[in-house]
Length: 153
Image 1: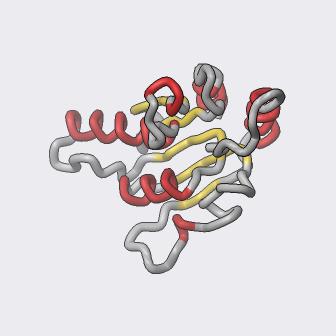
Image 2: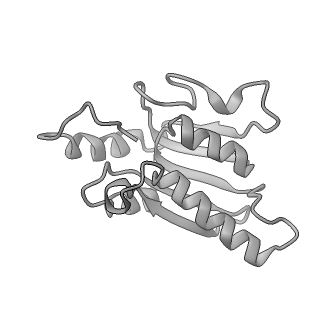
């Protein structure tokens, strides 16, 4: 999580969220910060960017597995939103580890619990609240003087 926090700090004018994808051996496959403002892309959440890069890496290294990220862990400083939780399920990550809970938009246990819906064909393990105070502090430092109606993730 320390690495995800460091990545979050690189998000510039965007909400400071950092994400990593680690393989089964704990090796970092990808890291990304939110980049919606920089890219002008509403889907450029840290999780989506990291999952995309990890899938590219996986496809290059293991052609037989393609984009599937089985055995991998998504580490993110903030509880994923619905889009990011869905992307993690579609990528087949084994585990999602996150820092701060997000009661307004969180989809991994707070507002919704997308990843543990019994109707889905893949349900990753979830570990929440890892270094929660440090991750929440990133957001508290970011918001003063900004419009809080903007989406958090």
